[in-house]
Length: 252
Ligand code: 13P
Image (tube, rainbow, N blue to C red; front, side, top):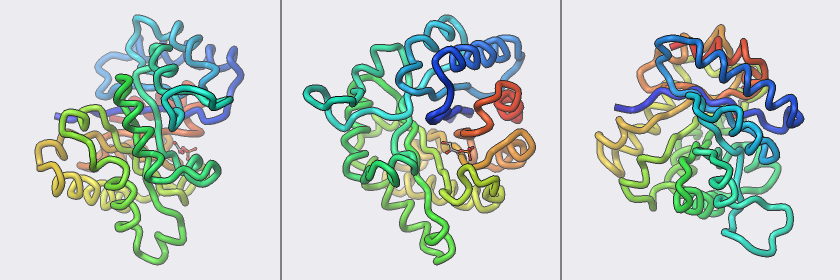
């Protein structure tokens, strides 16, 4: 059976001391919570990975980087490789966030390379997909999302899929306060699961965790997470305050 996961994506927020404090608060709250129905992960900037890992050591909260390089190593000034991320003790890497696709021109083909490097270095991938408002209004979002998923992930083996988590994040809902309705999210999640089933079969599709992201907060998380194909959330703004984040973690 698939896991429920609530993952924070801090994006380009917090200094290292601020991030360490936030990680401590989340770690303590998760340790104190009994009967949690989901795994908890924090996605932090590269600069924070080692210090946050030290805070989380021995606890229940997983650690993610927000990106990794498209190359394995070498003369790529300023880039951070999947091997470097893995060497910090992080277990996950978020790939293909719409902000990276839009502002840093990441393509499905580049993301395929990044996914391969991440998996080769033992990282689990939180792979983001999702459509713009234009595509949503034009009604052809399903094909767009199917292309994102298939072009970057459908070369993988079934064994490799055990380390893939999908995050559906409609761009029009990110940081806008405009959450997709639980029905809109459920429709796309079911569509993604059917797409995976068509390629790899029902068992693998049913075992794949599919998260929702986009203005998810304590007030709307219970309704979203109650949907059959929504297995948790990828949380931006609300992951920057431990109390808000925990309000989503405990929504299951
Ligand atoms: P918000 O929760 O701030 O809308 O961000 C969602 C997101 O982009 C998570 O990756």
